[in-house]
Image (tube, rainbow, N blue to C red):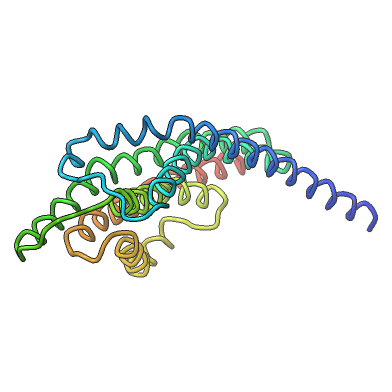
Length: 246
């Protein structure tokens, strides 16, 4: 009993260590984000999609609010791979060398997919969304007067959720390696998964059909890719088990 309690204390101590490291990285990158936030905002401002936006503020706190959100975006992007590495280090003692080596490969893959998701949402989904809504406003004769707060809040609320959703193939691959899911189960759950992904897609985009369609289609494709990845991984796992048995 004393050994079990000591082991639990060790695990909690190790977890605290990893969380402290992640927190330090987050704070440091957040400070770096504050330094580079003006340059990042100028980059966003110079893009073609933002040319029609007048950079008005309608409240004293609008400027600082956007400043903080931009710094948070920078911090999250740099903290994410460090957080995944720390999670891997925490779980590494309970894994075999082969499992630890395989799990380490998930870190760069997950980060790359996150960046792809953020890039896709900014360069594809966001401009199409703005153009659609601008056309609707012009069709009803509305005068468009946007401020920084409205523009950047809409953009930031789209970037991170889409980046996270693009992690789906990595999550499915990881769960398949753990034996929690398999291709057969994923196919059985296809209808339910589609429904959940559609709800997620509608939740992270403004309430218009075009924006929903633009984000939902990639999500469904990601799920189908996840099934293919899971099937390939599952077959390799079965093959290794057969070879080990022989």
